[in-house]
Image (cartoon, rainbow, N blue to C red; front, side):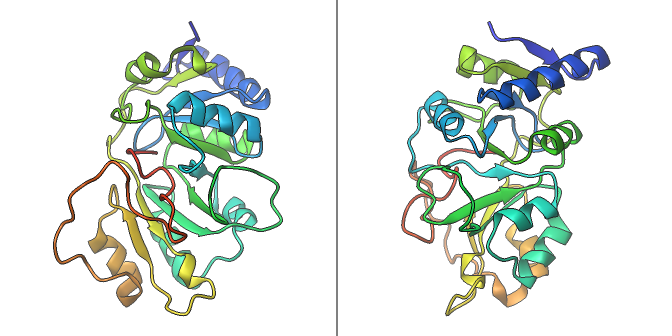
Length: 249
């Protein structure tokens, strides 16, 4: 079985981080903690590794994973533009439970799946994972679960579902919140005729808190709560929002 490292133990932390770095470098998968739920991670610039991540979860290219970054500098390198309203969101909610969808930098050579030219980016509030991101660079990270099953909030749940498809498991104890990140679509703020931020998935950051920052740039609140579906909300390009099928990091 793939090893589990209890990262609350200093000796296991050092071994686990080394193993995780090496595994990512070889194009393998790693399960890691975030401030929301556990995630399954791959090198975002290794198309084979990203395909392996999707295969391990049992999902297709139409559900591309978000990308976790270590800071705003990396965000600037991954997206075409950061509008002022997104700068405000990042200042208020990063690191934390907000994933932001923006047009991707067109010069990037990567393949996350059917993204329609966008990328969903988040900076997690988890020290261990931020340290790993500083060393590996951006990671494609989806919730550590099989498609259709609840996201893992502890390492045992992740291991039971993902088994040896993952090279190493980094255990930091139960997830702090167990609540998925909120995903917002800010693509129309970049040259859109009607600039507006849409909420693709409600999670750790409430609409009320988003409106405090965005004001009228946030879409109107829904009149009625729509029933949940297995398909998730629509993306700006008519596909499925990144990682909307199940709670993700």
